[in-house]
Each structure stands twice: as C-alpha cells, then as structure tokens.
Length: 375
Image (cartoon, rainbow, N blue to C red; front, side, top):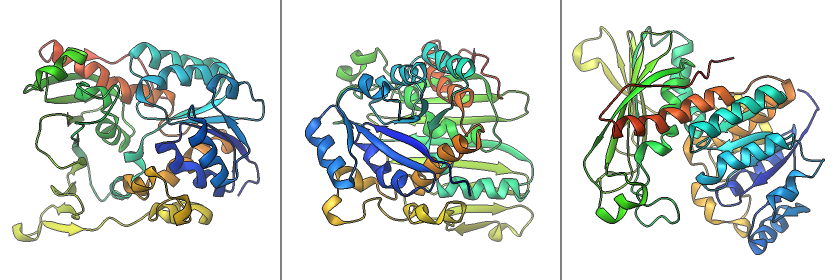
C-alpha cells in the first residue's frame, strides 16, 4: 500500500461528524481541519477528536494551502456553490448528495474538473452499501445473467424537518434511488419521463409550487437496451422509511424486502416454482477496506460514550457505506484515478432527478439529459 497521504478537511459537522474518525484512521489520509459555523459545536468535536485547525468560515478554510481536499456535508442548497468554490480554490472535492440543485451548477462543476484536473466525487451512500455491493458481486460474477430491468425507491416522511425540506419536490433529492440503478452497470441516463401522483397539503405546495405526493420516473439508458424505474415520496404517504434497489436478470433477480431489516429475496430461474425465491442476508464487505477502517462497516463511528453525538444514531447506517466512501475518495486521489461516481457520473445521476420533476410538470414529457458523457 502507498505511504502517500491526502490532507482532508470536513465541512459541516452534523452528518459530517460521522466521517471524522474514519479519515483519522485511514492509512492514506490526514484529517487536518474541521469547518462549522457554530463555534461551540466546532470546538466540542475538534476537542473530542484532537483536531487543531478549526474554521467557522468556509472561505478562510479554502485559503489554507495545507488542505488538499474538502469533504462537504452541508445542507443541500449549499452543495453546488461550495463545490464550485472549492474547485476554483484548487481543492479536490467529496460532497454528500445531491451534487447540486440546478443543472447549471452540475455543468459548471464538470467543466471545472475538466479544466483543472481536480477530482470530484459525490458521496452516494447506496452504491457502497453492503446490499448494493452484494448485487454488484453477483453481476460481475455473471450470476445475474443478462440484466433486464432495474428498479429503486426512496420513501421517507419528512414532516417536521426544517429549512428547505417542507414541500420539496420528491425527485429533487433522488440520488439514493437513481444512483444504484445507474451504478450497477455504470450506465448513463439518456432521457427521462416522470409522472406526479397525488397531492400534498396546501401549505406544503406553496413552498416549491409542487403538488405531488409521489413522483415516478422512467430512465432510458444511453447506448443500452436497459431502462429503469424509480419512485420517491416525502410527504403525506403512509410508508416506513425505505431505500430499495432491485435488479432483474435472466438467471437471477434480487428484490428488496418490504419491511426494513428483513432479508433480501433472491429469485433463481428454472427451479421448481416454490424453490425460486430464497431469503438471503447480505454479507458485509469490510474485506474490501484497509484493516484500520474495516470495523466502521458494522459499528457506530464513535469510539467511546463520551464522544457520542446526534449523528451517532446513523452510525453503521447506510448499509455500512461510510468507510467505503472515504476509501474510494482517498484511493482515487492517491492513485490519480477517477472515483465512482466522478463529476460527470454524479451530474448525470443528480440531473435525472432535477429533470424528472420538470418532466412531471409537463405531464410526463420526455426530457433529455445534458451530454455528461462518461470518461
């Protein structure tokens, strides 16, 4: 393993606090700085994890020549602007989902990476979750046969969430269901068609002028016979939280459980009908990681009760993906290669949702994606 190290700063310490000890223990990373507007919270976490450099100003952090890369974990409306600022300041960027909230911001980020040679990675948890990695292993081993169709959902009750959430159009934050359907074959979306269904409460509609309780999108893959279906709901739909991903192949198909915590269901073709389905517990994929961070796939990231933090409740959540995300980003920088998803792929994934909502507003009209051709 290379002894080279990347100097990283984490921006935003709500969900972002999850990643502090993972970077600290990754053999090729130095976590050199934290950034948070709330100085008391910043000092609390920086003290707990022994980090000296602390910034309440993102702009000041970007002037620090010691920092090679930033990992952005701020609210959704800030992602595009902050990623653009970081790239213009000469920093590599990892950013939590989605990449941005407009097609124009996505296009600018892609252009900046092309102009500067800097690396951008959208930190999409689902494509590094153990369930996805299991399906990916089946696909790469040929056990699925020919992939025929993909489906995913993300349903969540966002009542009571603050700031920009009330009334948010379902597809404006669709990367958790768009990401896996494109990632399995590393495909690219060519065009989308989306229908809205149902109506949310009047006080929610006015926030974004979006009435839909559910949005359902069909995605046509570029240079492929594949299409996928994704659906999303945020308000006024009775459903337990669910991020599902399903793949249908000619030899095997894998379906997500209807109830959280239940096993996956694997269907095998040509068996006697009662024997076709089998419940399978997804294995863990810590073996793909350096030993120093393997335990973060199954445990909360905090090492002691004294360090417990609000985001600890998400520890070991997201299918054990957090250490995989850190490893992919750091290794891409060390090896001077493209991560998955890179800027173009992240833009394609993000713009599926943005343009799907536009399609719904136009009665399901087909809308083509910008030309984010894959490297």
